[in-house]
Image 1 (spheres, rainbow, N blue to C red):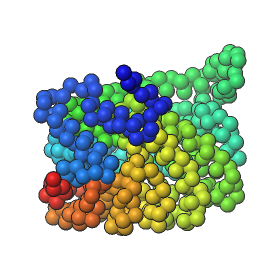
Image 2 (spheres, helix red, strand yellow; image 1 turned 45 degrees about the horizontal axis):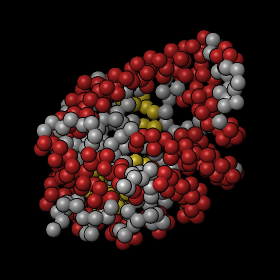
Image 3 (tube, rainbow, N blue to C red; image 1 turned 135 degrees about the horizontal axis):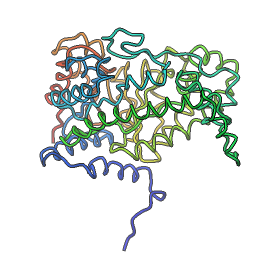
Image 4 (cartoon, one colour; image 1 turned 120 degrees about the vertical axis):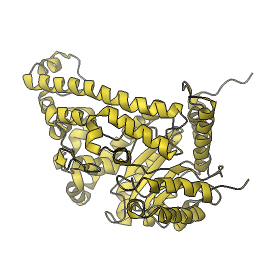
Length: 446
């Protein structure tokens, strides 16, 4: 009798099939009725076939809803950040109205009270630095790691994050700078515990507890609407989040100003830190996918695009460790989905160096005909109805843009229709136009 293969003995394709099976079967989900279960399976099958470079029944659509559900429902982003009932109501009704191929969930709507409790400094948000009706957040890039602290991070990332990064980026955690070093060779914990006796540390710990209680309420609302949509047949598309090591260093820690100087003054420190981050990113993504249904991991990319760095710099600083992350995820049966923000057209030949049908490349600015030509036999591609058309165009203009994309990218399979960016404001009927276009122009003949 043939025994079941163990995970460690499987190829990446076999591991992915296990994950695809979980996505398709949705174990533990109590669907509303048999029709909902059938809709769910049809939608997931649509995505799986596209990922495998096969032809599904029609082109799948990943709606770029962004934060639009809030205004569509008569609220604004600031309101749903603080009122979780309104948050759940908006996203539930929006999905019911749009009937997307995958659920547009509210997981990227930050809980405002949590940000207040921790004294969050990395963003401005509605009512906190932005107008009450602002449609999205504004990231506040800064130098949160000094040039001489690379070695501190590489020696112990957890300790650096706890005692240095958090106190700099959240005023509610400033007390953690007074904790004793969090060392893996610590044999007697009493000294570390003693450092927690300081009033500043205890206040930060209390802030952490308060934030934890509040974020539980937010998570219950987000999880509740996601579960309800799932039971009605709307599958999740992403299962976690990851990114490129260079972006982790530049976006979050050194900032644009810092990383540009470091690329010339201390390139070896950047490379050392990025290598240190590779397994951390991979393991984090694996944990996320293991706790989700979907094996697709969205990966927003920032500073690898053409206006920030040259092709030589991309091949030197960005691609080597990012490729290691991608291959690490693929080896675990995960489907990476890099979202190439900006212009990645000069990178096409480089990023084509991937196992066949292992990845989704999602493009913002791209000659999609050229992307199909270079990547079509290697990777599923997604995108890229311009945000300008989605936000300011008419229903017919959106459908025409979708039609052209489908005719260019859909032949032979391996295409997911989506937007060039999230639609945080505008006419929601333009998203309906995307669904109509897929049904009218994206059906494959059998």
